Image (cartoon, rainbow, N blue to C red):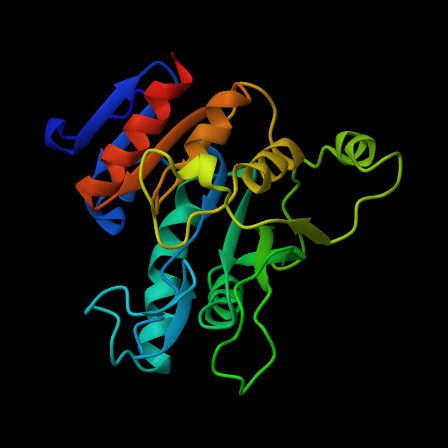
Length: 263
């Protein structure tokens, strides 16, 4: 956890819990090689396309920002390759990376992972038990997200080893092998009391991911911290955490959630 980073980038530094403000591409270059046990990433979905969705029963724009408007196929693939390349450098050889996405970005992510020297272990389908309706009535209701779980390809012939807490997953699944389709509801209101984030994941989802692929004391990185759900889950499960985000607003939200844990 004692990485030598510029003071200006340290937003919060607690024992086992650290938030960094700044650009992930730049900050990851300052991390030591092979220093992270597990990475969870929820990268941009490239949703700023003028579409609409439902929020609190009302129509709302899906646009998130200006920067991702007009990105073509090559730009999207290049963007994902860039951050995945840096994640590979800091990930331990026996570590793994989990990446969440929808149809808008997950296929670029899958290709980028292969280009950057990863092997995909599983393709997890998160089935949402209470998805918002499809108000366009021109397609099926979007009710799933994909989470890719991958490990390093160390050589052309050798795959990286990785931790999988198989028995723990079997136990929480009623004594049966856990399948790659997981059912969770959307993030409940109680997890949004400190503020809202556009693509916030439910705590239960991150807890399962962390329990499946890490042990207590491991160091987890989220290069797109967002609302900090990865960090909250890590802290609850006695793992160490580093989260990076460019937006102070979201780091403040994470800080409030973290402080609530200590009350």
